[in-house]
Image (cartoon, rainbow, N blue to C red; front, side):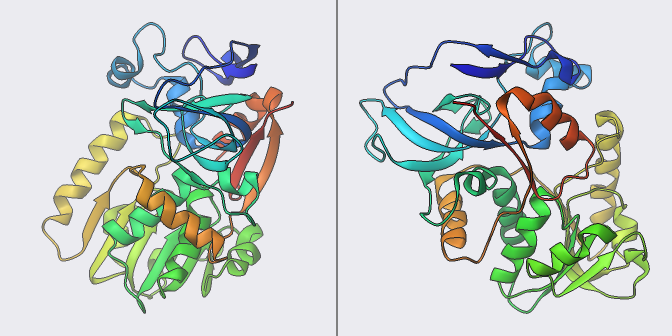
Amino acid sequence: MKAIVYQGFGSFDILRCEEIDKPIPGDDEVLIKVRAASVNPLDWKLMKGGPFIVRLLLGVGKPKIRRPGVDVAGQVEAVGRNVTQFKPGDNVFGTCRGAFAEYATSRSVPGMKSVLVIKPVKVTFEQAASAPVAALTALQGLRDKGRIQQGQRVLINGAAGGVGTFAVQIAKSFGANVTGVCSTSNVDMVRSIGADQVIDYTQQDLTKSGHRYDIVLDCVGNHSFSEWRRVLNPKGILVGVGAPADVPLSRLLAGLIGELVRSLLVSQKIAIFIARVNQQDLTTVRELMAAGKVTPVIDKRYRLSEAREAFRYMETGHARGKVIITPEY
């Protein structure tokens, strides 16, 4: 089968579309015929390796993970003898390792538990593949960290991005009044997915707008906690789920520690987290899509052989919704 692989750390030029052995599912695994996969920032950040402290976790000389791709949607090709939840022919979506391939197996690996659920009938494979990591990040950020309630005022910074487009819709499903922040070209799209108000950051400094919010979900990381305090209610919560691509990890961590310390001295709070993949929350995302309360936004589609171009586009930070990669059977 064809799959995207890399043998070392570096630029996107190290990505190769190669013929490798088709995986055989273990006793507790599901073999998926991949119909679509989506790109997340983590995919290309892991490939680049990062600073030395991160390289220790990923592999000093050669990467431990050599097949990128986590979000997947496809058809069950075969199941291990201990698998009872799925059967061949089922249409599923969820997470795995090595999703940028013609076939992938769902399994547990360190730091990422593979999870699958049945795809809703009216949701396409591409839409389903776009959901897992981004939608879970939005759901858990708003519900668990932001403790969202009906009638609250919620600001989504980066509302046109992968997480942001899900966050706008999920916040609306909770009955919140939602303000989305995006560029001029995305104003109409963000409004079309449910935002009650839209702020064009090229025309207005949102931290000086005079409006106050109960929750700010920051998918960009381009403002400090001190700046966000200007728009947070006295007991408001800043939930950070994104960071600028061009900021070194060491500087990012140092700044984050400072922000967390400062939040201990004031009534407004800050929460930083990484989404946790689990069956229950992915089922919630499935139900929201099946009910039509959440419709994934897809920006661009690439073939498996065009993975480098997909990664390069994602790195620009201007993707409008999600970027999809599909196999070439």
